[in-house]
Length: 360
Image: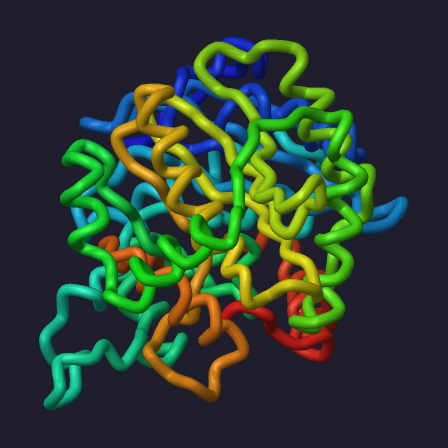
């Protein structure tokens, strides 16, 4: 069955827990130079909509990016067939010089439920080689054109905290060291406040310290400005919030989170180089969970860890910190490409490979 696709206004996107498929995210990316498209999608039992972002890489070429979409998940054996059909339909709505469509899939990887992918201690060993994953994804497709991307844009591995239980149960599920650090922060006078855009630059100074300390590529300030500018438009059930951990009037840490249709998502965090023994990030995450519960959220996505319990991975520090809060580890399928102009795609892919991969 072919996919039915109908163009729609981005402001009419269906409310969803996935921030990156909301009208708010469309507004954010539009401010940052991307061109958003929205479509209603029908394919067999799949009925929903999708946000697609077009970005011009140079005057004569562009790419299409589907951030954390499509949301609706077909049966495992039909995933590649669905994506192929959807891609053919999308191609007719995209510029002729579009090199490829990239899907940053929110779907959980099937290899997380494959017992052969776990070692004798029950630790997940990760996904198999890309060539094997491509073989599985393309079974049943007409052209065998789905490619595992060199890099994942959004982190495919995360920790989800269940907020439907009591606060006592949430604390009980945490590791003892995490609970201890939360109490320690309170004893040291760490207080959590909800702030607004007026404190965004103060938070950004902490973010620069964090990026330099952790050696990751940081966003420019206008990226975060766009978040809060879009938030002022009041997009359905989606909102952006800034929470700061304060001691004696000094900000030691800060979280930027989204709340969308019952899910809170930890988007960006920052912490000071000073007074690290105050354990402000621990208190901040705990109070963020309490804040999200008060806003009616049923889950908190801590958004981004290393895929494995592996101290050599550059994101292992996030794995150790976030899993301490006792949530469920989720492994998604990451980015998949559907090339439209194969020669240009090969060149683009080679360039990505040279630049290196942040999320593995």
